[in-house]
Image (cartoon, rainbow, N blue to C red; front, top):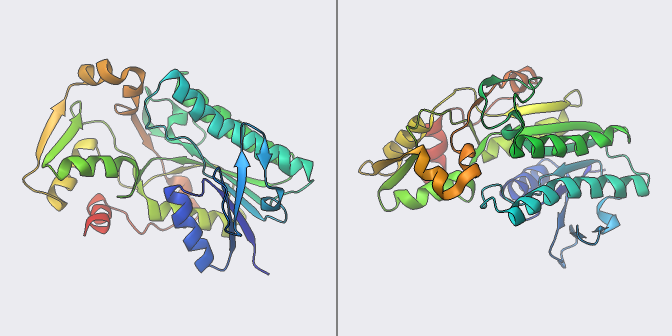
Length: 299
């Protein structure tokens, strides 16, 4: 019998790519969506009303919780609350409903982010490192991961994926930067010397499948590529592979801070991610260098 996998965030970039990969590997894939659907494998949930169609959770072997209001939206007070609720409240709701029906999923995999380590720290971060300071992003990630840890009470295996920047032309940072390159303009934040931890969307989906299939894997895991690059190196690769005549414009940090305030810390983080745990678990990347990843998305 096929194992059943439930993915939250049905319309998300990774959810769609992961769903197709899981189906190819003989899993029964279902989704939770905030929009009602006539499709048999898409189930409705509503955080405001604490509602989940319980058939979604019934006999589910693995839960992949990817839903969350995008962090790239402007950090207004209202949006911050949406970012928080869509991650923390949604995790809590899934846990409570599983507990209510006395169901123990074999695996609970939750998205997290490199923001866990704090956006104003620097250096190479391993999973057992803790944030050196408290800021909104690190507190959000910490609460997010605590909600995932609740599934220990049910006896589930838990993985918390601390994601770096995800590259895909259909979403995230690459989609936004591509727009400028079509007009031969590339915007570089500050001097461009800050680290640019990244991973291709296909490798994210592949790693989640790897997590499901390898029962010894657990706990927090950084998701990034092995080779560390800077923002400058990323933008130069874009220039090489997309439009050589693109003009790179360097925008001083203080100007960005004027326009987006606290959120600017996301653009100037000096955090690098250790991927020793990914290697320890035997994962192999399909996209290991930035030129290869960009060419895959553009050509």
